[in-house]
Image (cartoon, rainbow, N blue to C red):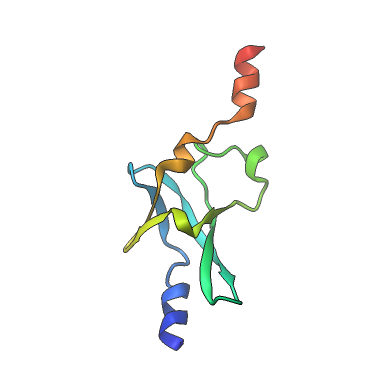
Length: 96
């Protein structure tokens, strides 16, 4: 179990990129399901302001579902779902 714990804590501080190479944020914490002893999300901070506005995320950041993770190495690669997220405020400003 100690080696698994080391692997989980080694995620903290890694940069997260979409599979298209766009910087998303940095892993601040890991969300665990203690019943199944699995990782079910990554808490990101230092978010890319072009992807997330502060009004969408608050001051805390976002949690990315772990099922979006494609690969973990020197960086974490996730699906490009984040890039396709629509900003409702931007749509309202354009319509006004």
